[in-house]
Image: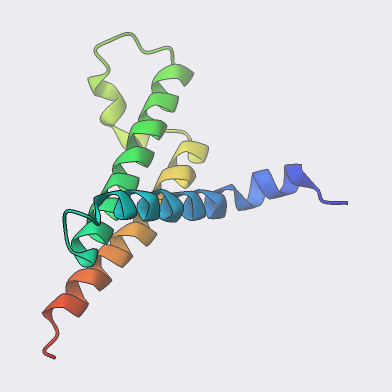
Length: 109
């Protein structure tokens, strides 16, 4: 029997990384007809970072019943631990992959 409560409590961050990479892949495929593969991957990774930031910002706004305009929700240090651990692991992985794309593009061939 799989303990889904344990997985949700302890491995939620890993699921968000997988979700971010899948989202980045879908966006990259959609952009590929118009730009190079490297550019499409970069666009996908940046989109995934923005998606997670917007989603966690919205979750914070809802959790504290923040009325519009919600400028104060950009203060990520006010987010809950769960909101932070949903956003930062996915962002760090996506930024690391963006850095890898940049670094491999600059290497002499």
